[in-house]
Image (spheres, rainbow, N blue to C red):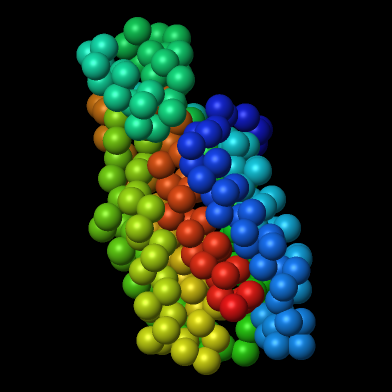
Length: 231
């Protein structure tokens, strides 16, 4: 496997950085004696920031040839505007085919997955509870995610919000862990299941799991978990 650095979606990165600024201030005001989450607030914050900064790095899993859709000038401009994808990437080197890559995002898939598994292992929650809410998130992700030609796998950011009410219902004794595990692992596994519905006739230069098109939905439960831990 090899890693590549993609041009980041600056709007998304700036948005989350602006959210993290007041959260950083909250970490100083947190009453350590009342803090109950296993990770200390500064460690949790640093991990969250690290995920965001490393979201521009993709780890290539495999490559395949796919047919490149015929884009109009307006469609190319829309992809540039909505998803911050460089024109050169959309147009590709070959006029007819994409040398498409399937990638795992370092800050949006690999590291969050390790983080969620660690939280699940140290949590006193029953495995059955975590499996239930994770399975629900997998199903929701598979249902709401879509394949967008030229972009890859896209999922609405609000999908990550579903992890909160599910955790409140299924794991009320540890909402943060329930939300983090289901929101991260559930969405990531749901995105993986979506790979099998890729149409080779409607290609994309990169199909990023946890990167562009899906990073926000995975990062939102992390931000919410951090806020709940500091509350």
